[in-house]
Image 1 (tube, one colour):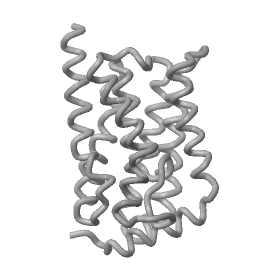
Image 2 (cartoon, one colour; image 1 turned 90 degrees about the vertical axis):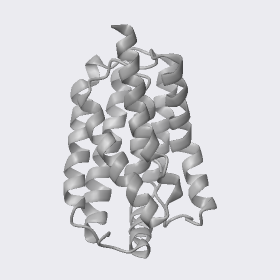
Image 3 (tube, rainbow, N blue to C red; image 1 turned 180 degrees about the vertical axis):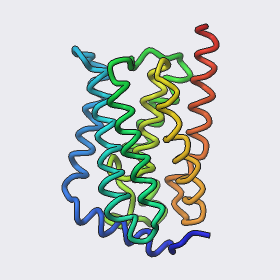
Image 4 (cartoon, rainbow, N blue to C red; image 1 turned 30 degrees about the vertical axis):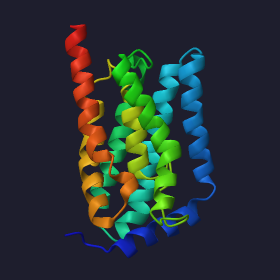
Length: 208
C-alpha cells in the first residue's frame, strides 16, 4: 500500500514540471548530446557521456526526490541519497567506461531503451491520459533516467557492476509502483532491469 494516491502522485509532477521549466529542454539537449557523442566519438566522448548521465541522476535525486516527491513520501529522502550516490559512481567510473562496443543483442536493446526513454515514453504517457505537466518527463524524473541508463550501460559491456545496483533497485521499485499508480510508460522497467543485467553477464561470460 502506497502512502499517497495516484492523484497526489501526478500533482507532484505538475508542480515540479511547472517549477523547473525550461530544464526539461536542457535534459533533452543532454540526451541528444549523448547520442551524438556515441556516433561522432570525439576525444573523451565516453567520459562526457558518463558525466552527462551522472548529471541527470544528480538533478533527479536532489530536485525531484529531495524537493518534491518527499512532500508526499518520506522514503524519497532515501531515494534522493541513492540517486546522488549513482551520480557519484558514474563520475568516479567515467574514465574506465567504453561505450558502443557491445554485442549485437545488447546494442539492439540498448538503442531501443534509449529511443523508448526519449521518444516513446512521453507518447505512451500521453496515450494513457497523462498529459503535461502532470507526467514524468525525460531526463528529470527517475524512471526515464533509469531506462536511459540501462540503454547506455548496455553499450558499455565492461562497466563496473556497482553501476547497475541502484538502477536495478529502482527498476523494481518504480516498475511495481507504476502498476499500482497506472503509469504504463514505466512498466517496461520491470523487464529492462533484469534483462540488461542478464545480457551483460552473458556478454562477459562469452568474452572470458
